[in-house]
Each structure stands twice: as C-alpha cells, then as structure tokens.
Amino acid sequence: MFSNLKGLLPVGKRFRTPRLPTVKPAISRREFSFLLGAAAPAILKGKQTGSDACRIKIDTDRVVGEIDPKLYGNFLEHLGRCIAGGVFDEGSSLADAEGFRKDVLKAAQDLRVSFLRWPGGNFSSNYNWRDGIGPRDERPRRLEMAWGTIEDNRFGTHEFLDYISRLGAEPYICANFGTGSWDEAQQWVEYVNFGGDTATTRLRKKNGRDKPWNVKYWGLGNEMDGPWQMGHRTAEDYGKFALEGAKLMHWTDPNIQLVAAGSSNYAANWIDWNRTVLEYLKEHINFLSLHMYVGNKENDYYEFQASTVALKERIRLTAGLIDEALSGAPKHRNIYMAWDEYNVWYRARGDAERGRRILEEHYNLEDALVVSSFLNTFVNHANVVKIANMAQLVNVIAPIFTNEKGLFLQTIYYPLQLFATHSHGTALDVFVDSPTYDTKTNPKVPYLDVSAVNGNDGALVVNVTNRHRDQPIAAIIELEDKKFSGDFDVYEVNGPDIKAENNFNTTTVKTTRQKPLTGNGSSMKYSFPAHSFTTIKGRIS
Ligand code: AHR
Image (cartoon, rainbow, N blue to C red):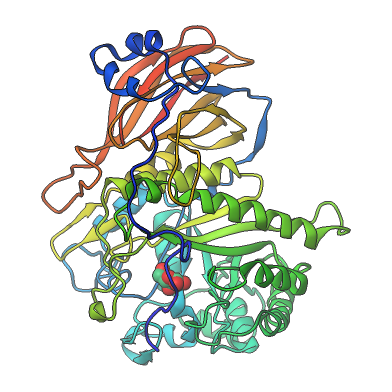
C-alpha cells in the first residue's frame, strides 16, 4: 500500500524488444558535402525523402501562442531527500540560518525555476497543513503513508513560502483532496491569503507572518484517478467533492486560480476521467493537471526518444475535451493544461529503495534529450499548455543531486536551463521537413524535433533535438518573412555517448557554447550533431 502502483507511461506500449530504426535521411549529396565535409559519407547511406536538405521553415506571423513563464516550473515533495537533505538541511555547514542549502538555492536560481509546486505529489493526499506551522520543535511527527516514512513537519507552509521568496519563483500549493476535508483546504487558503481578522489569520500572525502571501495557484488534489492515491475516487465522486472544495476556496479568495486533478493513470479510461472532471468543475477551474513519466526499460533508444509522440497525442485529445467542455461558455473563459509532473522515471522505483534515498534516478544523455523533447512539445502547444513542472527539483527524479559535501547537476538540468533562459515570447508554428525513423509503436518519427520562439526582445530562438544516435543532421533554417541580422549564439547539450552521466567528480553532459553562426539573408545552415540538443538565438529584422 505504500508504493506508487502506477505503471510507467505510456502504459503497455513503451517497453518492447529493441529494434533498429529505419533511417531515411533527406539530405542531398551535394548539400551534405557542403555542410559536413569529411563527415558526410556516413549519413548518405539512407534514401532521400524528397527535399534537398532537411528544412526548418519559420514565419513569425504563424503564431501558436504566448509562452507562459510557468512552463519552466519544478516540484518539491516531502519524499526521500527532496526537501530534507535537499533544499532544506538544518545543521549542514552548507545551509543558511533557516536551514536552506545555499548551494542548492544557487543551482535552482541558475535553473531559473519559475514556478514551484509543493507539498506533493502523493504526499499531499495525507498532509494536514496545520502540522507544519508553529515552532518547529513543537510540530508533530506523523506516519506518512504515501512513501512509508515519518514526516517531521519541520518544513511547512512558512518554510516553503520563505524558500519561494529566496528563489524568486511563483508558488503553487496542492491541497489535500485525499484524506483531507473541505474545511482543511478552505482554511489553508484563509491562512495563506486572507487579510481579515479571524482565528486562522491570528494564528498566522502569531507564527510570525503579518501580511497574507496571496498565493495564486492551488491544486484540488493530486492524481485522484490513481488507485495508488490515498482517497482515490471515481471521476464522479472526485468531481463532486472537488467542486464543493473549489467553491469554498474561491469564496475565501476570489483571486486564486484552481487546478483540477486530470489524468495520470493512462492504463484506465483517462479520456473519460478528464471529460467527467471537466464537466463537474469547468466553471471553477483555470487548469487541468496532467502527469506523464516515461522510461527506457527495454533499452530501446529510438523508441524512448519517441516518447513525446504520446505526449503530443494526449495534449491534442485533452485540448479537444476542454473545447467540448467549454462549448457555449462565455468566450473569455478558458481552461489550460498544467503538465505539473513530467520527467523520465523508470529506474529508481522499487520497494527495495524504500527509506530516505528513494527515487534517486541518475540521468544520462538520452534522458536529457527526451526532456528537451518534452519542452519542445510544451512550447509547440503554448496556446493550450500554460504550466509544466519537471518532477522534481532535488535528488528525487531531479536535475540537482546533493550529498552532504556538495552537489552536481544532472544531465536533464541543461535542456531545462536553456529553455528557461532563452525561450520566452511567442511560440511559432514551425515547419520541419526532417528525415524520419520507424519504431515498433511509432511510424515516421522525425529525427529533428524542433520548436521556435519569437522572443520578447526581438530575438529568434530555435530549439532543435537531434534524436539520431550516430549521425549529424544538416538543416537549412529559412525565414519566410524576416532576415537574420548579425551573429547567432549556439548552445549545445551533448556528451560522448547516449549513456553518459554526470556525477560529483565529472560533468560529462552539459551545455557548451559553439562557434556563433552567421545568417545569410533569410537562410542559415547548420549541422546538428548526433544525440544533441541545440538552442540557436539571435536577432531578426
Ligand atoms: O513525483 C513522484 C510521484 O509521482 C508523485 O508523488 C506522484 O504524484 C506521481 O505518481
């Protein structure tokens, strides 16, 4: 009962016998020799697919939508060493007077975490927020049933919101809709956001916080569709229960925005779950939460790299369900998707890891490439996806990994950092003509996975994942309606091979600055190295 019973996603499809993909490069011999010189012959073995070279065509009038800064969020759960021993390590020489690890805070600031979800995850479904306030030494120790441990409650609402102000991120609190009651959820909003004089706000003041924090984003529970969740209900029962909670929370603070628990259990009828939840809650919520974890259990690199094909499909289907739910509603009313847990997670899952060091996944280059594709996909659907939280921030399936002496940055840190640093503005509907490969479950997966952003500052940003394990892929980037102006910065995440990992001694997979590129009028040529993620950024006019 303690374990997370959910299957890895997408369920039943992902982990089959490895199979070599069919390679279909689309580069002409002439073009390719020009682009790659001596490296060219390696890629010329495949057949061409019609065009002379791989093309990435960009038109700044073809707008997908505004990129919400909350796309570059993370997640803190009371789980293993994410909080205790991660962001919060009282008594450590690396922590400040409040107990926050300074090195971790710096790494999180450098990651530009925009939006931070807390306190879970599965943990939130047995969390009583009142246990985590007041003098730390007087807080109760509780049996924690999501992960089978004891929660000391030394990190609670005040600590989380203190951390948020140090980090400079937007907070997002997930209320307990598992074992919790409507009262508990309502009073948590009152404690955190209410300005008037009540017993609850007096308690807040007594605990050292005079003014409300005005936390805007609140979750109506976590993964309520999963049988592994405490308080799991049918979609109807969850819909009715969450609706009453949502009303009370809104009546306490009409400015809050609510996130309903949508699908995480794709082994069940996830479409019906979303449809029912939307039907009950559509007048009260601003976001529908969705979760997705992927893995490479069968060690099939190409199938793994195609994981985001399922993500794209789930986004498309959920957008349709939202449209269906809102048909006939006032035009200004909208509900967006919140992918508030996503990541690679398949190694560190078993009961054997129970205890403080659970879910300590070590990431390699192929994982970082999949994360870059998650981010490309979110940007490519920026009109309907407004929240995304990499799960989690530290140690637990995380980009930052600590021990008592320091930390290292995992491979997945780097693509997220590049997106969070550069990809702000308007997402563009980019045309990509790339060679493709077939896997057992996915036909015609493009080797190049691309997103493009018309930056707030007049810059153009192009993000390209080259999924090819062995070969560079050359592309011509064409601008339909503008000209490249000046040099373009090139940042590349790569490593010696797809299984390369980082550790406390070596950072093998990281971002490196490449030679700047110069555009030639409205086109620019670049060869994307094998198994790489590249961000190109410069000015257009
Ligand atoms: O992020 C780890 C766990 O994955 C979360 O607690 C839960 O929501 C999901 O199943």
